[in-house]
Image 1 (cartoon, rainbow, N blue to C red):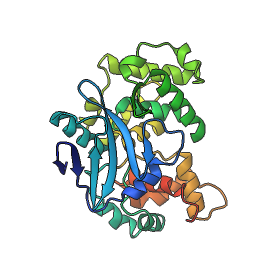
Image 2: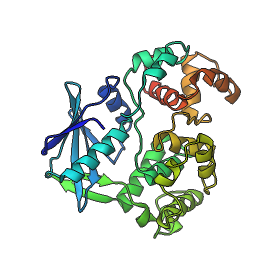
Image 3: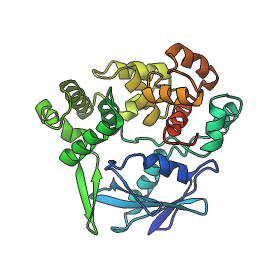
Image 4: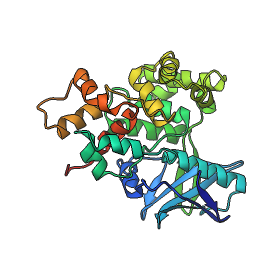
Length: 305
C-alpha cells in the first residue's frame, strides 16, 4: 500500500490508472445503498476500529485519495487498517496495463476501456458480506435486492450516529449465526436464501470457512470448487465472490443477466447472446474476465453508449 500518514488524516497514492469519478458513478448506482453515503464528491463510511466505529470521509484531490476522520482521530494501527481496507476496496494493488493492452485490440472492450479508463473493480473486502450480497441477488432484480439488503443491515447491523447522520456497518457472521430462518423470512427472504445465509454464518463462526483459507488456494478452480461445495453457492455466486472479494481476475460469472444485457446493447443484437457466443467473445479476455465483466456492468448505467 502506497500511503502517507498525517495522523489526523491519511493520504493514499493510487496507481496512475485510477479514476475516482468513475468509481463514484458505480458506487452511486442505487439510492437504497445503506453501507455508505455520498456527499459533495466524497464517500462517507464506517470501519470497525479496536473498540468503536471510525467514520471515514474519502475524497480525491491532486491525484491523491484523502481519508479524514470526522468523529475523532484513530490510532496509528487503526489508520493503517483503514488504509488497507480502502486500498483493497478499490483494488489499487492491480496493475491494469495488461488489461488495457488486451482491451485495445478487442472489439467489445476497446470502447469501454477508453470511456471508463481508470475504473477499478469496487470490491467487497468482507467475505461474509460478499456471500450475503451474492445470495440476496440470486434470481431477483437489483431494486428488490437492495431492499432486502437494507432490511438486513437495519435489523442486524451496528450503527454510528454522528451530527444527526446515521451510518451502518454490515452485520457480522457471529451475529447471524445465532438467528433463525423465520427471522429472515419476516424480512421477505425466501426460505432457501435464509437457510443459505445462516448456514454460511455458522460455517464461518465455527472456523470452517474464512477468507484466509480461500486465498491460500492459488488455483482458480480449487477456489471455485471449495465455494461450490457450500450449500447455496452455485457457479454464478462462486464467481461473483471470487471477483468481488477474493481478487481473482479470471472469475467470470458468465450466466449473469447484466453481462448478457450489456453485450446485447453494445453489439446491437436482436436478442441476448448465448453462453456459447459469450465464451467465443471472451477468448481474448483470458486472465481478465473479472475486469471485462465489471466494465460491461458499468456500461449498463450509461445511456449514451
